[in-house]
Amino acid sequence: MGNCNACVRGESEEDYKTSNSKKKRRSGERKPNPYAEDQIRSPAPIRVLKDIIPLIHRSRIGDKYILGRELGRGEFGITYLCTDRESKEALACKSISKRKLRTAVDVEDVRREVAIMSTLPDHPNVVKLRAAYEDSENVHLVMELCEGGELFDRIVARGHYSERAAAGVARTIAEVVKMCHANGVMHRDLKPENFLFANKKEHSPLKAIDFGLSVFFKPDHPWLQNAKKAPNVPLGDIVRTRLRQFSVMNRFKKKALRVIAEHLSLEEVEVIRDMFALMDTDKDGKVTYEELRAGLRKVGSQLAEPEIKMLMEVADVDGNGVLDYGEFVAVTIHLQRMENEDHFRRAFMFFDKDGSGYIESNELREGLADDSGEADTDVLNDIMREVDTDKDGRISYEEFVAMMKTGTDWRKASRQYSRERFKSLSLNLMKDGSLQLHDGITGQAIAV
Image 1 (cartoon, rainbow, N blue to C red):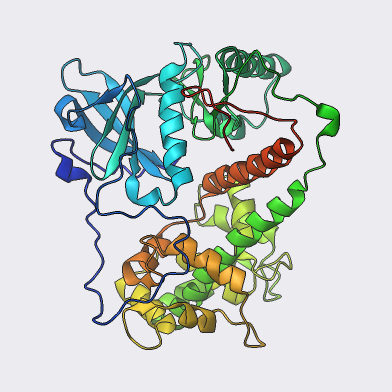
Image 2: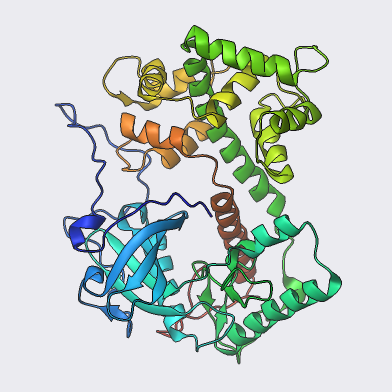
């Protein structure tokens, strides 16, 4: 999880209002938005946690807690350090932006997550929900603080686990699953990223987090009623779909980086050219993975081996296993954070052909067209859904800059893949009667 050391105050509800608002809209009639499918839009604020008992507080979160630096961020919200005003106890607060809850499914996911976390009994290996608040902008979940980081990061840092250490982790995960199932809950997103250590000590307790994909079920009713009838679900198609979407998002950003590269100053170009020459040790005009790794070490980079591999895969646009000068320039601009306001503005103007202040869908299509002059419609729709955060059918300058400043969120990709995988699997099993899930509150069968 990222640590941006962002500080916010918990003094009033105003602190949670978004500071980056869109510029004044152009006059005239607004086009219908083809990307706003199944959205929740109404004059009245969305009530996400209505009737969720008993942890909902009518007071403001700032009355009891002080929110501090940012601890990390995910698909729907940001987690902050949270301090109890009276006891001074350090906790964590996940603030979920209502603007990002774009569909009825998103809202129901948050409702169910709060209901499940408030239903589960205390367990040493499950993060405890202390309280939940809701205001006009956010849903705030106050939980115990886990300062030891993710199991995923500890595995990467250690390189390998002994059989005894691995057995201890596996036993903890199995105990969490047993407790959840005994209380009618399936977590459905068990992975190293969703287990946090309580502290940084070697033998710190390990705790399960993120019940956003979890569902209630009846423990006395086998959820796999007919395993022999379970279909062969084509999960590979889902994987390819997600990979295609994230590949496309990189292409959009890299196109903008290429535009930025074309407008770099002579001094900036000279620095990058010298760096390329330093890494291209055999002087063949291409940088291999080994040359990239050695070059990064020479310039004092602290990137770990897995991060360098990921960097190489992301930067290698044509997939030939090496970086040419153009690919190297684009990734260097990103790594060195050379982008500034002028660079962003020039890149935005490359797509905003009519100078309206917005990238319309036809302009995006033109900007991302291949050599034949064509662009994949599904690709464009994916980009619009991701970047057009206010769902008005076009990309503002603010939305464009937000995309450029945000790297590929691999944990978000993992979560979205998990959601798609379980949705596909569950729907296919439910069609032939092999799977039945029930809402723990109403007792009714629910769709996944």
